[in-house]
Image 1 (tube, one colour):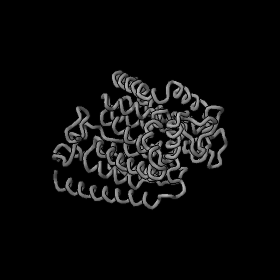
Image 2 (image 1 turned 135 degrees about the vertical axis):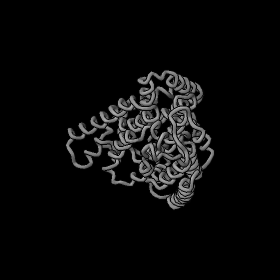
Image 3 (image 1 turned 45 degrees about the horizontal axis):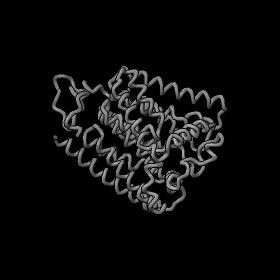
Image 4 (image 1 turned 45 degrees about the vertical axis):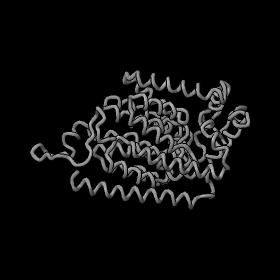
Amino acid sequence: MGARGRWANAGALWLAALGAVFLVASMAVLVGSPGWGYDFEAYYVAALRLARGDGVYQPWTLAEAFRPGPYGLYLYAPPLAIAFLPLTALSLSTATALWVAVRIVLLGVACALMPVSRPIRLATFAAAAFSSAVLSDLHLGNVSVVVACLSVFVWRWLDRPQGSAALALCLSVRPTMGLVCVSWLLRRRLRPVIWTAIAGVALVAITLPFVGLQGYRDYLTVLSHVSEVTGVANNLDLGSTVLRMGGAPIAATVALFLGYAVGIGAMLLSLRRDRELNYVVTLGASLLLAPLLWDHYLASLIIPAAFLAQRGRSWGVLLPLLAWAPPPLLSLLVVASTVLPFLAHDPIALARDPDDSPPAKKRAPSGAVPVPEPVPATWT
């Protein structure tokens, strides 16, 4: 590593340390504030219902159609509630604090395991720590940081059993991540799809003793009852954004389907590129196709950020910070995170000449150099 690389590494390390201090201090200040643990309490209470022998889901969600957003609403598959069963032995306040600590650690793990160079891992963690999306997720007690962490696992072990297992877990809380399996099928990568299916079946089998088949039937019933999500308060999808800005319903519908078209089109176009770019684009497309797009979903921006930075677009690492933009712009940020990966340099060309120098002026690169396959030793 040359002098430039050492300076980059030292600077990124200081930024990451500052980000970690900021995260911990912010959460300490926000304890007990409005919205503190708002989403976590829904998971915690669902686990309490399960511990009492009741159903995971509220009766009213099983009885009729409803709009998402009410306090205490549990919309996830049974495994999440089962995972929180041990926390029911703690008070709500203690469990909430522990859940915050666990997700801060998971954010660090996610950045540490990214298949990029060390300075980019550190810089990405720093950007994430100061991102409003991550702060919102930690404050509300949501699972978006967990989803981001699992998505990093998929990226690191792409087309491997470990990555497929992580995707199966991810699907239990973010079903639109199934688009990754669709992209694998279109690339004729059948093995990771089969591994994902096996992991999914295993997850269901492990959780059946807790909820039985009825628990999964109830989950499907609840999903079928979710309605009128466009226009729900705080939903940031393109259609809801148009309605919030005073647009007509027909304009909101056009915007919504335009977002779907961009997501699907980008995913299909990425099939012509390398598998990492295809995955990062598909991840963005999964957000565009999600019926609900809360601000904390943008915690997953750490992945296109690190990907772009590793592929020669250093400005990409700033993507998580753009989550501070006004709400009307956040849906456009998701669009940007879906299409910007196409600007990344080709990994083979970048490995040959990371500085885009003419042949006569080529020099050995400092720091880690990405190559498409196999996974280089500098990633570990």
